[in-house]
Length: 203
Image (tube, rainbow, N blue to C red; front, side):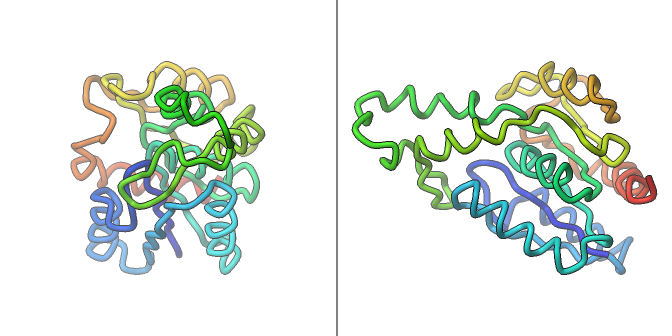
């Protein structure tokens, strides 16, 4: 069984939650191989890269996505049918990432001009925002294979948007009071979340 961890914005292959997942699976689920690809590239390249990883074993692959990684996990689950666990998922990156475009109004000359560089080196452009807009999430095609876990205290993304979106489309949503966008107590919930993720594969 493969598990692909999809990190969020301003993160990389060494993301804390990805490491926690890998360590937990090594100890408790040695049959699960955790892959932690670096996603600091354009969204089309992210989809291409992760799709290639999934296609190596599509029926034996689980996805865990945090924040922007939650968007990609949903998108890929819709496309391929992989079970997906979403942690404070971003569901409208074409809107939430507009903050970088608004901060760089003086760069209107070209859509290829960098409007933000992530800590991992992705040079985001308005073309990337257009890609997200053209591939916005409008449904959850395999709701029985999707679980979203949302902190009500998320200070970066509006938690109600994710709660309402996944609930309305039939996916299970677990809302945890308080907390933060980084899901700082992630390690404390792995013993409950991993069995739930594995159960999604049986749906």
